[in-house]
Image (cartoon, rainbow, N blue to C red; front, side, top):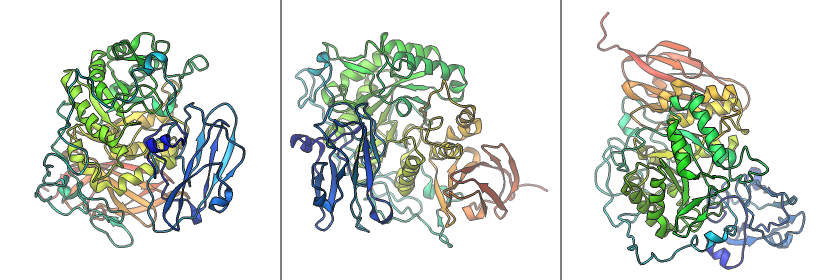
Length: 628
């Protein structure tokens, strides 16, 4: 499939909200390979979809102008489309064959239906996380300096990265004993891991052990170093020893810049100050939700010295003022930039020659976290730019946590992603697709993390975390049970907890989920070990486990059923608890206590459809040393 720049050179246009590269074909087209609809709300978009000619495994462009007979009558535009415009549009789903796609504009509506046959057994590329229009024209004062730079200016030396995220590296990759990560060195992990982080991924890779009755079963307590491992390498800034918590604007407020029509909800100083007030006054800060994070669409361009400038109408007092306000409330401010010609929504990017300058600007503003996206950048630019930004942030002397989107742009897996080296560069990183406000989106992210947990789990630890993206709780796409499930599953995965909802109007039941003190205690456990799925039943019940301090652990019993509450009966022995201890379990959501649990004790949990039962399990007695 042609790359983004190649298509632009050939005059092909495609539309959506954000982009990480060309639209890719999803792996599953639904029953019998039937096609899906792409919907839009503007006659000004010319949508280019890509279909594969399966007989010869060729990829060809398919546009509404193509005759329906070209691919068996599959292209059925409901109305003619005029030439493309440059207005950014929000997306739902992934633009491409076999998905549902919605584009937003006020000019009109239309429908394009696309279908094709699925060739069973043949893998297709996973959907691109973000899709977008060619960037809109920037303000006059920004256009001269915000474009891509092929050469560093004469005043700044050419930067050569000390290492690469790719499998081939100019330095020897370091293997971590017991963790089984890194492709170099000869140290063997203690025990057997199916897939090491430096190995090429196999789609048919199986878990470490399988039980009977169709259950997927991996080693858990008693041999924790076989699977539950941590890394010793970390970015040397001393930050984020536990996964960060806070609030991030993107999922709920996106790139709403219309402050005239929607002053309460547009990306503006007012919005962030009001959210800061809520974080400080409604109990969030005291529970650990301390980051107030700006995403895309905050800037307007660069000044005559090349410095990034916040939009003067929406941020009249500037970012430094907003940082001071956050700090006065005991909060921290995060900001967004993009390592490319433009941000994902078409604002000025941080090209390689601007990395040091922008890092110094953020430090001058006293920003506490930087999220660096990767739209409109090449793999080579990312391989140079992310390490360069890490070094530049550290060189400022101001502590700035570094959130990278780098792995997500490289597919999230070895050999293109080397997590051993990545931990030396970033404090947290996005691995996979952007989350959307739907339960299906949550499940797709969870499935990817589970499928590749043998690679991802050893990569996480204090100071360096996998990031499956924001919490949807408090928005529109999740039921109560699904909201509880996302909170529990993100907690057991030791994921950053970035809410993205309107804290001014959030319901009491959603507050109870997000402010659950025992949940947060588990999430912030100082061991910093990421949990994993340890059991998958034929009954569509899955069990996740995360080891915690002082011999404790978190268990999540998760139901993928959609029919009725399910009575799931099991024992600690079935979950590979082998120690001679007596345990007590506290239900994280209800507070109920279950006492006297031994290895052989059978118990039953009732799990609602798409819901969870979550336990905080801790030893109360050691039978081998206790006295009568």
